[in-house]
Length: 119
Image 1 (cartoon, helix red, strand yellow):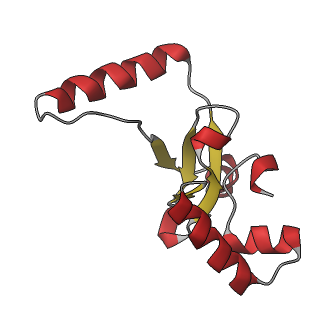
Image 2 (cartoon, rainbow, N blue to C red):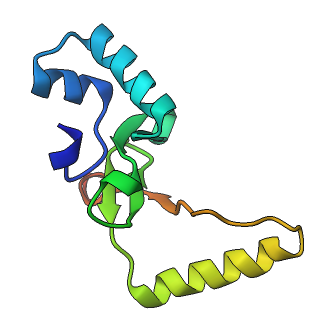
Image 3 (cartoon, rainbow, N blue to C red):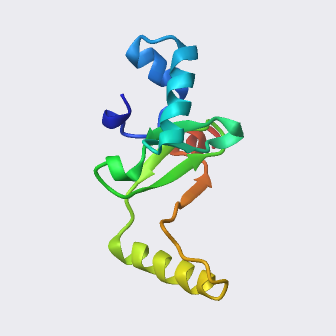
């Protein structure tokens, strides 16, 4: 389920797509998170979603998080933006002696559906 998802999925979405009881999916996802195979993506209002860890996915990406409906959408930044993020984060944390292993970049706002619904 997660390997074919176009976006991070809720536990309920994983359960519905797999036919496995939600309680079992909760337990399995927690174990996969602990093992580093799956990562938890914080949605709006505590609505966590899950996706494969980057080491098991096809590409590096970031997230657009709708603060109204909670949907989380993947986006792949340009190489220029990635270099800028790495450069700025590295410079910021170098003075603290902090070595960056990887970064997560989430943009929060309203998705297209929620934005057009408010107009």
